Image (tube, rainbow, N blue to C red; front, side, top):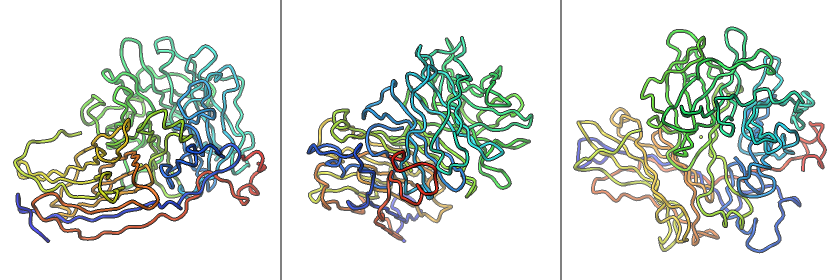
Length: 511
């Protein structure tokens, strides 16, 4: 293994690639998705993801596991590819493996005074008897953001196709001290030791700032607000999509908030001011229902879940594998005009320090993906290794500056430090990159840092895509292993006869 010129530390590079092919895409092609105009919809299939979830068309943005199926409920605009608050619905797809997804009818659509202007985001909760319940934000006839509840019409239906919104909604109206258009995103509920259910709701308090509020209930009908917020983000403005869950440690159930001395939790929030998702580890007081971060109290200095183009993430507990799964929304990086031409917008992703001035470094070294034959277009995913105060720092970057020759495309460089001790890992740095048409998603250092990007090359078409491993530094870097796979055909939002037969839904209803 080669020695680095700036320090006595050896670096090896372990690469893993999962690449979609032009054939690795199968998705709903019924009358609602069929496109006959050249240049629209299917004409832009080369930029459409093959194994990242997205609906057949238009714009999208509370998953759960129930009776052997993964249910993905997502914000969906059935009438257009741009975000519109008057017609947002809850799309609904199911899967047995989180890879192949089957489309169902929308689970929630605006239909009552309490959600007349849109069904916004929310969460699903599995009750002790195994039945699910939804809490979601509705935009009522006055434009207020209110919290509503919905139940499955037939709890024995394995696909949970139809949902009922009781007339007694809203169950939580907007409080007087909260901005009427900044009160949303109820979390999955958890059951406290006192027998009361709790949810977290994002809000903006007048003259104070962003807050994550706690509400308690015994029946999902009558909710009472806790005197203190779970967390108050004075400087952050509005926060969205809060998540609270325990740190994964031996003996700790990752599906529910833990209690007792030494229990540690993760609080995750999406911050509108920066359009980024942050998280921090801290302590949750399950009696006072408050959270205290272990680190800086300013959420803008917390760690980011993804250092690329991901926002409004949402997690759920998967009891079949005793794990927590997190989804993020990777919206497009080109123009609204391009969205209209394609006929769709947005996909779901698969899951701070400042730079130091140092006299030398190793690298950059890494990958050039989505590269054209003449190298006019390419996306660089790479590391640099710095040494400071006898410590090594690993910087991971995804550079989009040459990802496309098109004008009007957002092409920034993304970067973050990888929280790892390179010497303790025998000088080995791993990189796992998933290339899925317009999505380039990379995990460095065993997933310690994630960067998701959207790319729109003009010249990388019809198999004219190249992959290179490069080292532009003066120090030698050894590629210890390189594995690459081509993704098999993924089913994206179709419904096979087998699932139809198992459900009370007919094919006409399913489509």
